[in-house]
Amino acid sequence: MKISKEIKVALLGIAAIVILFFGYDFLKGSTIFSKSNTYYVVYDNVDGLTISNPVFLNGIQVGHVKDLRLLTDRANMVRVDIEVRKDLQIGDSTIASLGNADLLGSKAITLFLKNNSKQYNGGEELISYKETSITDMLSSKSVPVIDKVDTTLARVNRLLDSEAKGNLQQILANSNKTTEAINEILRENQRNINQITRNLSQLTSALNQTQRNIDRLALNMVEITDSLKQVEVKQLVANANSAVSELEKTVAKLNSNEGSLGRLMNDEELYQNMNRSTEALNLLLRDIQAYPKRYVQFSLIGRKDRYKVDATGRVITLEEVKELQDENPDEFRRPAIDSVKVTPADTTKRQ
Image (cartoon, rainbow, N blue to C red; front, top):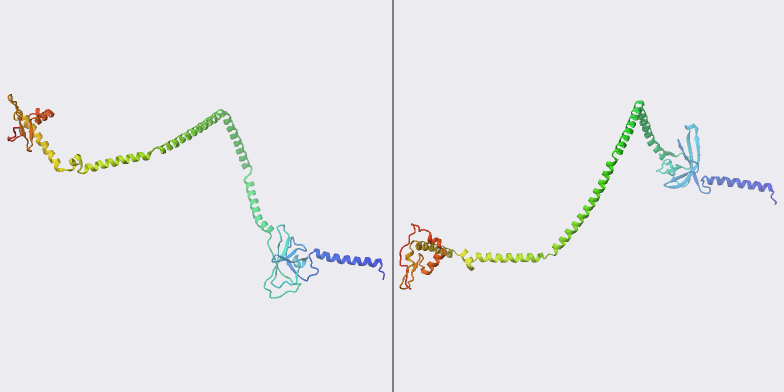
């Protein structure tokens, strides 16, 4: 059987139309070979939502927007038909939330599945909800701020009336005059300023020199400290300790009965004997001064030694009396005191 050219053209056109139809549905996001159900949602505004926009469930795309229609009989609200997978548990508690899909403002619908009391099979209306977009948030926050800025600018404009403008001009003029006066003062005192600058430079140089001197002084102090550390301080301390030890030994001997000084300081009987001897000597000197002939006699025929017995019973020879007279001439020249009484006794002996 021979097919004419007209039939071939007709079959090719039909195939092209079928491919075009299914291709268009595929480009819109329709699932051609999978089973799906269609539901619709009514919103008051779907700005940014277009056909084939995704429908998400828990972050996974489960469908797409199939159609958008304006409902003139329902206050110009918008009906959105969505096509989702057939195995989803869609019911009377399912919420279709319209919100932003990204920061660029594209829209998407997100499904929230609740515990359904009635199961839907397709064609039913879902509960609608519209999330607040970033643009709406910025608008709600920025509009009051813009209103306040406008009010502030209006108040500033009212304040800047003709009188205020004149005051501002006067202030600016005064500021210019003040600036010119300061410049004139600076020009007149330029020489003084230069001198002050030179003085500051000299002062800085002097401070630097002083700093160097202080550093040198610190270095010298360090060297002196190191030298003092090297001195034989331990030897000096040892010598001082040795001297203190010897002094302690000497004081200990003085406090004891050892030696003449120790006995003299600690022996009371010896001290009393010395006192008595001194007293007897004083009595003897006074007696010799009062009665020298008792103790000193001269003989032309022969030598006779005379003796004197003092109050303690000690015998004093003539040589000892002469030595006492030579050693204490002032005592022998002093006149005798009447109260001194010497008891005569047999105080002379012959040798």
